[in-house]
Amino acid sequence: MSISGDSQVLDDLKQFKGFFEFVKNPDKFSVIIEKAEAVVKEMNDVVSAYTTIQEVQTFRASVEQRLEEEAKKLDERIAKFQERIRQFELRVNQEDARLSKENVELEAGKKKLAEDQKAVEEVWTEINYKQELLSEETLSLQEGKAELEKQKKEFLAKLDALRA
Image 1 (cartoon, rainbow, N blue to C red):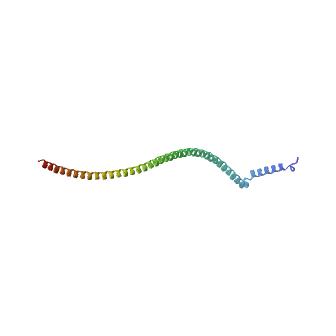
Image 2: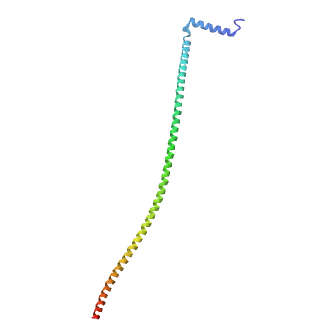
Image 3: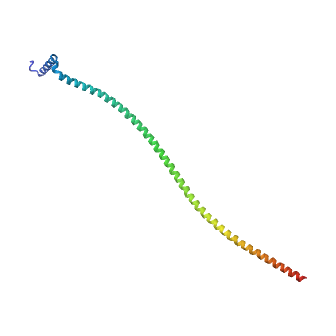
């Protein structure tokens, strides 16, 4: 095997030669070293950012879990409030129906009362009319009685005169 025939060996020797040149004259490679340091710094920043990203992702997962738990609690509270609202609406509707029924009964009672009052007024009007007639008849009877008493006295006086 010859040295010139194997390309891999030649590439390795070139790299080895470059390494010796770097060892002999490091100032010549300062730009490459600075770039390599920048790359290493960037890698370190990426690694620390990755660690920070992992922490953020862990925190985010924790927050999302707490948010889900709070959302579940909130959904339960909303469901309870909705049930309370439904129960309240049911009671309001029942009370409204009861009051409507009472209002119908009250209106019927008012109508009956008005009819009864009218009937009472008619009876009172009739009683007053009959009382007036009775008063007139009583007065007429008293006058008739007085007339009869007068006639009786006259008759008795005539009768006494005839007997004597």
